[in-house]
Amino acid sequence: MCGIVGYVGPQQAAPILMDSLCRLEYRGYDSAGIAVRDGDGHTTVVKAKGRLKVLSEKIDGGRTLKGCIGIGHTRWATHGEPNEANAHPHISGSEPDDSAVVGVHNGIIENYAELKEKLVKAGYIFYSQTDTEVAVKLVDYYYKKYPTPSKAIAKAMMRIRGSYALAILFNDHQNQIWTARKDSPMIIGVTKGETFIASDVPAILKYTQDIYYVGNCEMACVEAGKVSFFNIDEEQLEKETVHITWDANAAERGGFEHFMIKEIHEQPKALQDTLNSLLNDGRLDITKSGITPEIARGISEISIVACGSAWHVGMAAKYVIEDIARIPVRVDVASEFRYHCPILQENALVIVISQSGETADSLAALREAKSRGIRTLAILNVLGSSIAREADHVLYTLAGPEIAVATTKAYSAQMLIGYVLAVELAFERGVIDEEKYKYYIAQLQTLPDKAEGLLEDKERIQWFASKFSTAHDAFFIGRGIDYAVALEGSLKMKEVSYVHSEAYAAGELKHGTISLIEDGTLLVGILTQNSLYEKTVSNMVECKTRGAYLMAVATAGHYDIEDTADFTIYVPNIDEHFAGSLTVIPLQLFGYYSSVSRGLDVDKPRNLAKSVTVE
Ligand code: F6R
Image (cartoon, rainbow, N blue to C red):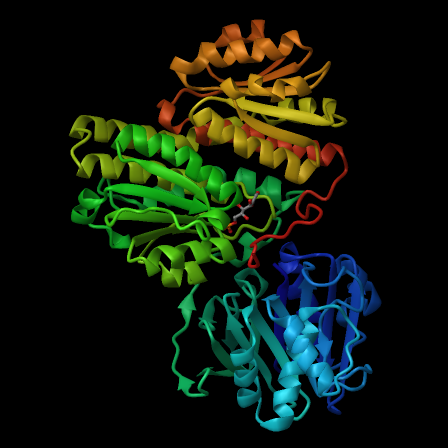
């Protein structure tokens, strides 16, 4: 949440900062600002409420601000409403020119009220409601006592509770940007004579693919073409760069109208690349994560922890792993898991699923499991992310950078890893034989092509979505794996099109919610599980009798569904365990086209931001 960028080098900083901020706008978009220092040592701060383009218009894309060093921020408000005063950067003084220390911040400072009180007593005057202004003034307070940036920041870090990534300019150190972080990401890229900082890889991918990660509770001093790292004791640290294989073009829209539709189309490739990375000589191989056959055999239960769509992946994986590998699986929302002290067996495996690898609750859940000595496996998309660095084992989805706020391709690639785990664990534990093992692998190998085929049917979904673009409510139902996918279909609908939508286990609807069904209410039934087909159809009929308009997503062959449903999408046949990866595609398209028909900003839905790094 929120995006940070920084630049120091021979070029004009502002246009570079604005360009990088554009690539980070998905992390927050209620206000933005930049600070640029000119050749005379004067730092100018410009901020604007609203989307980045408002800021861009104010400074002509950055061209009106001169100077070769600067920082920028795009905000997702936590403390203080989205307005110009609360937008970052923040300054140490109370007047615009009084900017001995200027900073931007991601995260939440939990004890900001207590720190603010201390600073007010010390004579500081506050102009915003943000916790960031407190952090910047706190650094200034310590800088006045201990006038070196590293000491001042380290002292502030010791006082601050919560999560933060900070980028700071000190007026006394004209050619440096200082950064520090705890539980919120920060990366640095150094090329010939230039240095870039960012909270997220896509912001600087265009300039370099070799990246330094600032570690937890570490600081960095950034100058043109060089960077030095320090721990909180101000001892210098040596670091190696990590090479990011993501293609810089992958973070561009590439001819598509929105990132979301581009990423929906990238799913066959995400599935293929992820599967290929887990295949070795025609057999599944997860040993590169460090999960050996012995470890696989010793797992007594699995606990999956995640948030949002990644939690929906967990819900689907539970059905698949329990059925194929016969291992008990529980699934928890990370924000609940971290506080309710779940009972875990000694040989449990806790699986954390996260696209960004930075979600605050998922990271905390991982730490909770580790603190109890439980083995952890993370399924992640972003290399080098916080969760990647702390988990015992990691399996990566090869989905490439995901820019649209609503996840699509990362979800699909995560589902695939869930299937791979189910089949591999089943085989290693002797639950399935060689023939069944090979059958499942062969089925998985058909997924990318079948997903591709589904994308060809998108015009029908587009037509249907435009017909329903004025709907107020939608319900998604299914049983078993279909229920897990209903959760995701419903979330896609509500988050990007703002149509109120709920997902229910089909059999549960009549225990209360059916009272909401009235003439014309849209009900989407998902039907891929043969043994549950008739039961879900009955539940759909119950709603139709009460006036619902029925859309069905069914496996090809069940053509009789057209006697009941008003609109049907068929998905190709595949082993039922893996059908969720196909049914989700029309549901993603439905959410996307509903949003487009309503004229909404698909890639940046209101109130949301990608990568939720605060609680
Ligand atoms: C919804 C969506 C979110 C994320 C959730 C977890 O489309 O993208 O629900 O799935 O915020 O994010 P990660 O996977 O980064 O931990």
